[in-house]
Image (cartoon, rainbow, N blue to C red; front, side):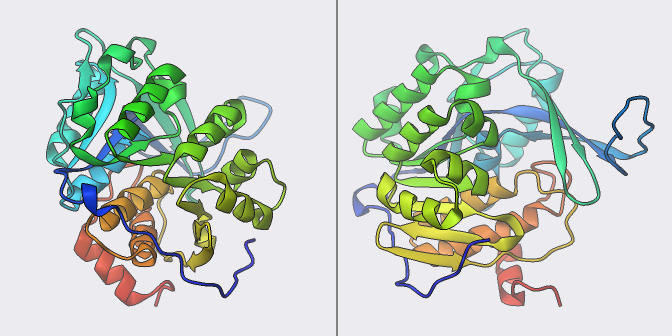
Length: 336
């Protein structure tokens, strides 16, 4: 549990020099088809357990995909850097990109490849587990990256926490960061639990380079090599990001700058599952900053968007709008 403190309000605004760039967010990372299997309970240990299935649905997902689509649906200008196929697992993703208004000119299409698939088991409590089939042929390569000039189009380059695990190797991610820096982009980095477990040092390196860093409690403890949340907050203040966001689910989120710490409450809703709640938070917060909103207001809108994302199965089935975010904020964090 994070101990809330009364402190100076955290402040951050995007540089005026990039505020007129036409693209709000260029997201690099994972892009998959999701098959959501809602079960009544988790399988028991020992094998041969019968688990009733409540529903099966297909949608699109992947952290970079989610961030681009959530922001695009709210009127933002977004694009994805990733590899994609043209087969059965990719068609639903192509359709969603079109519906959400996401630019696809930075996608590398591999002809004759089905695409990547993840199967998400979700229970009524909102817990979930993932089985993944990530086609290694879709891994991002150096030649797939946009040129440095292309990065001058965007305000934010967002690196998702699976980008160097499931989409490609570290080198393309490092090169994208370098090109974005040379082009004056704001660098946003999201952690992931698998990356925090197996690539902690590389994830820490990305956070030290980032302008904005996003992590949950486990990821933050791993990145900062600390054992308590309060210590992680202090470490993040010194690590390098101008803004760090500690995502804590129902406990809310902590907004951290080098000289201030603020708290944003979570919004209570009737959760179907929590998949992509963090991505909705990130997309909405980054887009809000692009529109000139103050940092804490942007984070509040992110928190509301994260809650609204929980009203659908899987990543992108909850099609909330900016007006829905406004209504939830007006209602307040607690359900009436």
